[in-house]
Every structure is written in C-alpha cells, then in structure tokens.
Length: 172
Image 1 (spheres, rainbow, N blue to C red):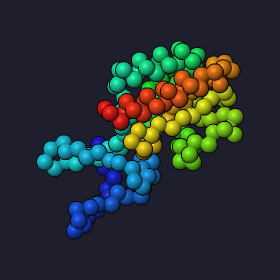
Image 2: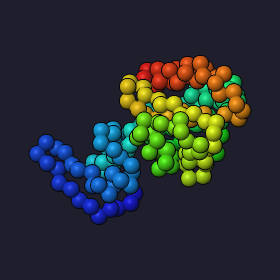
Image 3: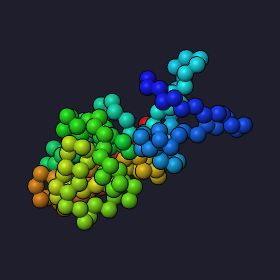
Image 4: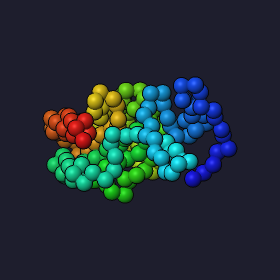
C-alpha cells in the first residue's frame, strides 16, 4: 500500500474529505460510490464500487457468444476499465481519458471516426457505444467494433443484449 502523507480529520458527522489529488488520480467523480473494507482493527480501505465486475463467468460467455453472432469485437467496461471482452488480452486495461470524456458527455460518438478506448487500442468506424445503466445509474458501456458493415442488421440483437445485461446486473 502506498502512503500519501496526507492526513484528514473526521468531522462531527463522521465524514472525511478525500483529497482532490487522490480523487483526480483515481478518476473519482461527485456522487460515485466507494466500497469500505476493514482489513484489521486499524486499517480502512476505500475502493471504487462498480456493479460491473470481473469474474462473472456467465457474462464472459455471453459477451463471447454475442461477438460471434454479430461478427464484432465486444468490449464491456465499468467506469474505469475493460471488464469483459472477446479479446481477452484487453481485460483489466484502464479506459482512456478520451473514452472517459465520451462517457461523461453522454456518449455522443455519432460524429467520431475513431476512438481511443485504452492507451493501446484505437477503434475506427464502424463502431458503436451503448450505455449500461442498471438501476438507472450509468455504470459502464458496451462498445461494439464491427468487423464488417452489417452493424445496422444487428441493432435489435445489441439493444436486447444491452437491456439483458442491465437487468442481469440489477438483479445480481
């Protein structure tokens, strides 16, 4: 665990302020959820909370099946990293600041010809971005990079998949 040398007092309501430098470094935004862990009687750990987490074998299988059906690369992110993909080499990669900006700006990707999704991956059209908002809170995105020009033929499958994934994360 890295030490920052920063200290904060607990106020009368039991609150502490996470310093701006740490919020910026961790890409924490106002209203974002943090998980609180107790390691021992003297250690509290804060972790960014995401309803979309790694290790869901069923979702991994679903993403790979979807990618095969629509002939595309599929990337599912939470708000900080790629969590699922049929390209397993990118799982766990941090999303780029460009993608973070797109997410913050309501995913207006219609006018983009390319998009950097990680520091290593730049997608060129045709690709689409779909928000994942289980429980009404934006929790990540589904990015589809089509291998051919048949993206319009697959819109119903993708809409169904987005709704299915949101429902899955709401109920699990």
